[in-house]
Image (cartoon, rainbow, N blue to C red; front, side):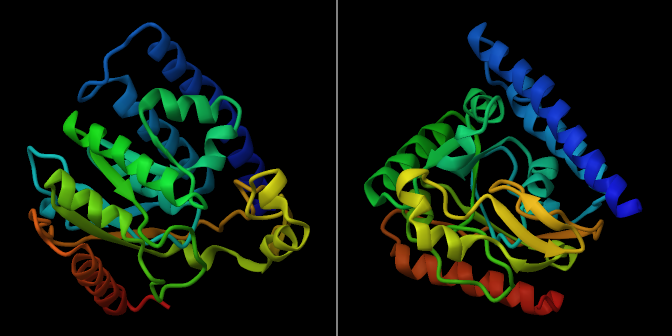
Length: 277
């Protein structure tokens, strides 16, 4: 019964938070509100994330915030094993813009709200367009914002890190900003995924005519059928732990492949230390 209540509360909270906070961001952009520290566009994602996490009952525990360099932008690089890693990061990180998959920008109000606050759209299947997204990210950095990336490229379901994409590390070197690795652990225990719709989407070519990488219905326990593709399953209220690791410099002339593997090794070691599995 509690699980059912949490499910209903999440959908109701997400709907109203998206409508009111997203609309405020859109109207603010239309009125020419400036994106400044502590302003609407910085706080809107934080408010939305706090509301969603509250509805589910997920608490975020952060270790190492003092390791984030102060007074300068940087690139946060995090692993990604749960949809709820995103609001967990958005709730606690200082002044940032996410690099997010293009499908999210198609969601009514939510997508326009993301554009209004300055989030960065990336088309993962289009290599040229993906590097164009990192050019936009460089503009955000020059404006004083940090950028949040998921260097694995997409969400997984377990903790051994998959190969990292090179783009975020080329961006760090070109922008001359350090990379701050973050490892997220905990939300993977929230649900048992029996079928997430990826195989069916591939079989019917859903990515070609609808630009979706999964069928918008998933089968999971203890929730049964879930609607997506943005919420393919709903978690139990396990805490999410975020560990911030020391910043890694990305000086001009650095080899992006070497930097990529160095960051990946540091993050995997941290996950192993946390006992993530």
